[in-house]
Length: 81
Image (cartoon, rainbow, N blue to C red):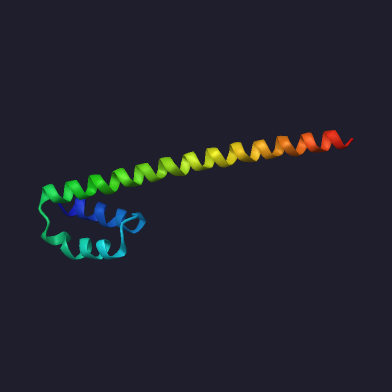
């Protein structure tokens, strides 16, 4: 159970939940049973995976936008010549 608590505490700083809830989890974590700890860990892990997926999607969109702007810039220069 301590291993699960350590995993939860390592995921908390990067979580999007409010600071108040993070503080409450830190206070109450020692009183939680194994089922509650597993549920909390799964929720935090899922959130982290979804956020990582959004970061990747954002990077792809930025790259597509940059390529689009580069192409538009090349067209403008070719029409000027």
